[in-house]
Length: 86
Image 1 (tube, rainbow, N blue to C red):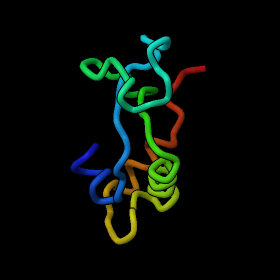
Image 2: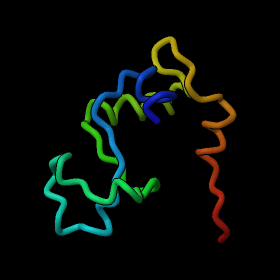
Image 3: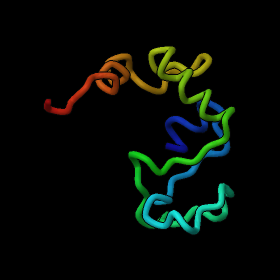
């Protein structure tokens, strides 16, 4: 995440943890985020609003941040495709 997306997109305040497993310890402060040794990648990201907007813009711009392509257009399409069975 840091090398391939955060640095090229200027995302500075983002980390992963498992705040779902230890919800009582989460107080909204980055230092209180626990479970970093076993992060919940599908729901454990914490970010500032500005950095979250940059991540959303990355998807809206088909994988491009500013002048940096960090995701292929094909990978963005794959992320938008529902893969669950009904």
